[in-house]
Length: 325
Image (tube, rainbow, N blue to C red; front, side, top):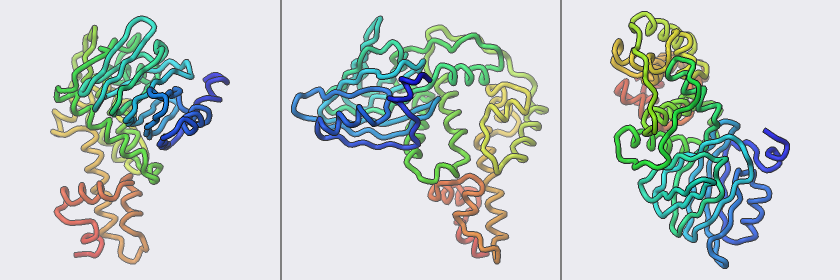
């Protein structure tokens, strides 16, 4: 990242801005550390709310505006923008062509090509960016071969197919988790971020899809993957880490778990961590440990999610196990 970029953009674990006048809008553009500058679409009225997170490789945010706005890029990083328009209309003007997103439309566009974006009144969307390097790394991990470049994804798609609806669900879930102050305890966050990218590469229609290799026999590498998972349950890891330890691609890993264990790798990790939490809750008497401490030990930073999953698996609440009933 260049020095000029560093002055205008910086990583933020969480940001939230509500703008209702041009003075606040100007301060956001000067000190907010975002990749774009905002202009009001109406001379005397400003209504804009934006919240999310951003890192060197991946950013995610929601935008709402009653009055509409125009954005212009402030940085030149090699990024892609993903946007799901929930209401209103977004006109994206690039150097070579324009794209128009309306309610229910997904947009995948190159950030360096952007001239400006114009959002209509009553606009609402969830958006993200991912670097070219991160997308290429995930593509290579997914396919298990030396892919020369990322696939060409369609700039506009209707978000009505089951795979795209699943992608949109994880997209929204990731944003909801950004505001949680316990995110540093969330061992599942790296997995969810990686899954989101794999879903993008798998579900989003491609202009020229690449051929896929046939998956190898699964029993041996699934066993290696299980060994790796069990040895690292208290640590943060991703699907690509598991696949690397098993010696296969992420796609083959997913197919192998479905074939051999009738589950997904992530569901398997969740189940194993729940089992460890269950054992610790049963042994907690006299240790001074709390339910939330035990949950966080195994990566469950969101207590409502932990309680729901725990009850589904064991038929009782964590507190009941904790009390020894």
